[in-house]
Amino acid sequence: MLLKNKFFKVDSSELSDATHAVYHVTLLADCDCYRGHFPGKPVSPGVCNIEMIKECAELLTGKDLLLTAIKQCRLTAVASPAVCPQVDVTISAEEAENGYTVTGLIADSKTSYMEFKGTLSIPLSSI
Image 1 (cartoon, rainbow, N blue to C red):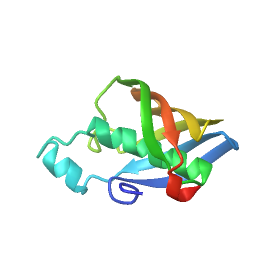
Image 2 (cartoon, rainbow, N blue to C red; image 1 turned 120 degrees about the horizontal axis):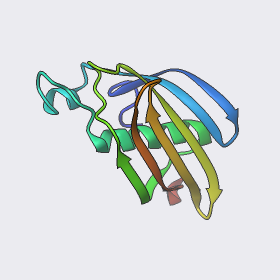
Image 3 (cartoon, rainbow, N blue to C red; image 1 turned 180 degrees about the vertical axis):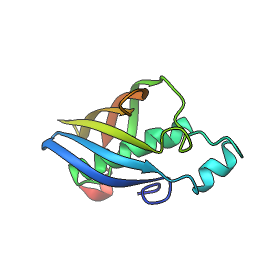
């Protein structure tokens, strides 16, 4: 996990079943990512949002995962720890060949920030 407890922390989670979960997270404003992106007006870099979805998928599946394909990724609004310090990361992970087909959504009660669909594979070293 690269960003968990640095860029974000998981406050709680709701598991619907083995393939669906919602992670209630706090964006950590003191992370170096926000100092560089952008000083005084921090925003969550899209690549960090994708990594947060991947790391939440790892929590759901209990496996180390690698991003192998992005089928769709839409940044629908700009997330910022100053504007939306708490967000929900909704994950669906369906088993596929050598990994999972994952859909993810980063949102709060008012705004959707990112929609993601892609493939996450289990590294060969973990098989």
